[in-house]
Amino acid sequence: MRRIRHILPLILLVCFISINGCKKDKTPGPSGATGATGATGTQGDIGATGPQGPQGPAGGPQGATGATGATGATGGTGSNGTNGTNGATGATGANGATGATGSNGTNGTNGATGATGAAGSTGAAGATGVKGSTGAAGATGATGTAGATGATGANGATGATGTAGVTGATGAAGATGVTGATGAANVNSYVLRNISVPVTGTSLSVPAIDQNIVDQGLVLVYLSSSVSGPWYPLPYTQAGTTISVVSYSVGQVNIIASTSQSGLFFKVVVIPGNSVTLLNVTHPHLNYNNYNQVASALNLR
Image (cartoon, rainbow, N blue to C red; front, side, top):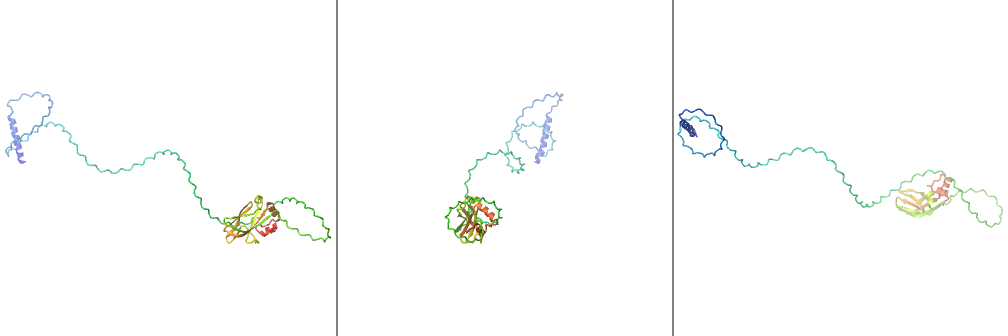
């Protein structure tokens, strides 16, 4: 490298001497007017590189630096190079923040009403609940005011005249007897023997109860363990068992017990409406729950 740097100035010096030797000795004439610049010719092909000249002698003095040569014409634009291969796919970016919730859309129109489904089958009937015990007997109500006296009944038919007896001797006048109590007409009394009463109840047959008795009369029911009494009014409670009248209707009285009973005796007294009215007048303080008072007032046996 160092030797090439020494040879280069020597070559430039030789070129400079050669150029000066070629100059003419004649005095040059005046310069003509500058002609118009000709059109730029097409650029010629680049010539082949000449062979390297012989190496000059080493160690010659370094020549002066030659003037910079004119800039060569710009070469034509080269063709585009081939595209480079695609770079590797970049990593996926982080998800963006969630956008604000949009406003609710308008409600759609209501759909048509569906057809009515078929009715389901009727469920099985539930079991019958246990029957509750009969409530305690209420207190005896106050005696009502006496009703108006009934109309006098029609006189009975006159009996046939008997044959005249022999006239007896006139006896001494006897003392006037006490006036007997007035009995109630059409009162009926029944004794029903050895009756069983289950918890579901039973009916006592009483033919004297007709629709008039149901509408206006009075039916009294008494209980005993013997046909001879004593008689207790219904409802009757003893040792946790209650026996009572549920209802009465034409021809019967309905009895029920909280526990099943048997071997009972019942006395049923049927009083028509007009006899009830008469009793209220003649016995205003009669206690219907006391059988002895009722039997005395009605002349029952």
